[in-house]
Amino acid sequence: MSQNAVASRYALALYQLAKEQNLLEQLEQEFKVVEQVLNENPKFLTILKHPKVSKDAKKALVKDVFKDASQTLVNTILLLIDRKREDLLLEIAEQYFLLANEARGIAEAKVYSVRPLTADEEQALSEVFAKKIGKSELRIKNIVDNSLIGGIKLRIGNTIYDGSVKGKLERIERQLLQAK
Image (cartoon, rainbow, N blue to C red; front, side, top):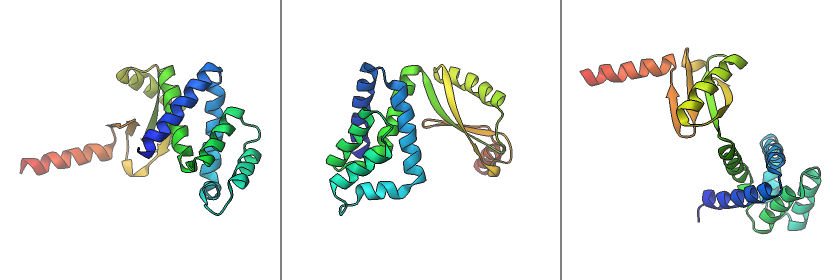
């Protein structure tokens, strides 16, 4: 079974458990903390995956680092350690976010722009593109990309809406090359 499928199963089980216990928001916030810890401290995951570090040491470390987290999250990480699937932690978090957002009618979007967007611009983009994809809202992550020259490029899942000057110039170039 692929890593993605395994992560999806863990995330689905966690989502269903959180839903039963009314912990959806809490678990989502805790997963964001886990994601932040792993991204800011890549050696933490290296320690969790290292074969020479005992399971007991790994579990003690997890209990110490995530002592303020819910028992549900801590138990999940401990289970991953027992099953030697620590490397799935970030992917499980991502899958959990997708499930929670899907239930709320929210989609994640990355917006690439030459300058940081204002709150009003993000709100306007959210309203327009949420309707296009049948969602109630978009959670926008703005990424500044000076290579775009101007305009924006928006990515929602696997779909890219390219309204950048760079994208338009590339399309014109392709049309000119095909016309030869």
